[in-house]
Image 1 (cartoon, rainbow, N blue to C red):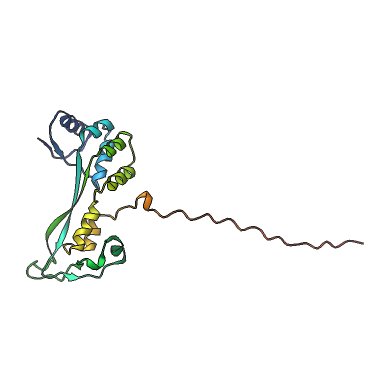
Image 2: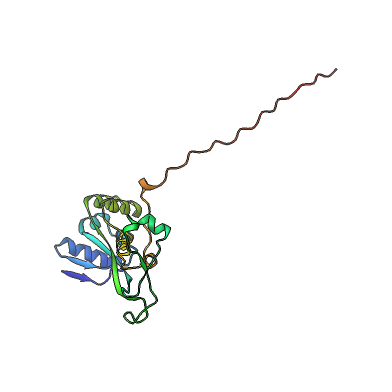
Length: 205
């Protein structure tokens, strides 16, 4: 097992990739916005796509959010965008930060909890990596394989009353809609036709 503190340059990335190909289990960190961004980050470091596809097993991304104090948190009215994201808003226990109490030392929060996103490199993703597909195409393929995003994992904790929705929005972004979820383009409106005005011909004597 090999632990790499952080991959910052091409040489470190190449050494880690080569070590994984020789049978070593390599753990490393990268600074990216999400799990899929780690793949494009390695491509930006000019690591050959075939090397990434053959050596990368999975990527785990995480963000830390504050946990609501169970003693002083107060019920929250769900916002319109939150209702659109939750599967069943009526069955959710939604709370927001309270005024603070002795248990949380007046902070309204007690500690932190992680929201995670795990992407396992499947054969479909390996094919996209080899063909240098865009980050949007890789993300769409990963989410179509039922890999929940950090935002979706955070929504589970929001619905369970562990964290506040505004705290989730502070550290993550809502998922971009997939291509099949985008609204259809409206039908083009034909330009207005000029009106025809009849003319009366007056003969000249």
